[in-house]
Length: 320
Image (cartoon, rainbow, N blue to C red):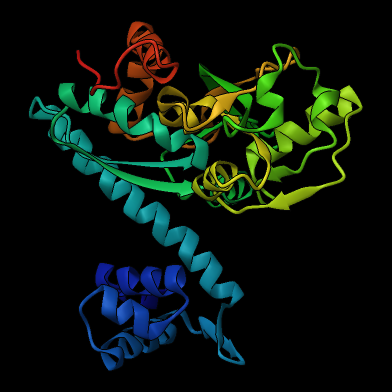
C-alpha cells in the first residue's frame, strides 16, 4: 500500500464524502459548519495523498474523477465498517444502538414510519435515516450501496438482490366524488380510457406497474397529465383535473373523509408487494439484521398496518 494513503484522516474523508454528495464546496462547508477555504484545503491535501485530482469543473458543475469514484467507494466501506463496529460493541454491552439507513419508494412513506416506530419500541437507541425516492433513484442507490435496506415494490431481477415481500401494495383508481364515473356501480378498465389520467413521472414504480398493467389489458389513455409526486397527484385529482391510479396507502385519509372515491373497477385493485431489498453481497450491520428479523417475525403487526391503512381501524401508532 502507498505510504501516502496511510496519512489520510477520517475527517478528510468526511469532508470529501460531503462534497461528493452535495457536488459543491460551499454547500459542504455550510452543512459541516466549516468555511469554504477549510473544505478546499482538506480536498487539496487529500488530492496530494491520492496523487490525482478528485474533482473537475465543467461550466459551473462539479464532477467526480475516476479516482474520486474509487475513493468514494472505499470511504463508504470504511465508515460502514466503523458503524458496524460501533453497533457490535453496543450489542456486547447488551443494547442495540446505531443508525438504520432506509431508502423507500415514495408510496411507502405512508406506512414505513409506523413500522419503524414499532421496531424502535423494542430498540429505543436505534435511530433512523430515511430517504424517500422514486424507483429509478432507489435502483441507483442500491447500485451505489448507499443504504442498509431499501423498501420498494417492483424489484429488479438483474442486480443480484435479495428481497423479502412483507406487505400488499394495492393500487386503486380514484376520482373526486362529483366525477361522472362515481355515479356508476360497476366499471371496466376500458371505461376509464376517455378520461384524463394523472400519472407519475418517469422512474416511478407506481407508473411502471400501471403501464405494464395497461399494456397487458390493452388499455390506452390518450389524455394524460404528468405529476411528480403522490401529494401533487392526489391534489390534482381533488381539484378535478383527472382520475388517477394510486396506492391505497397514499389516499387512505381522503377515502375515509370522502374527499376522494375509489372507482369500482372490476380489474382493480392491482396488487404488488412491498419488499425489503438488499444486495446479496452486502454485509449487514446488527441494526439492519435486527430490523429484517423484526419484519420476518412480526406478521401480526404488519397485518395490523394493512387494517389501519384500509380504513377499518383508526390510524394510531403501532404497539408491541
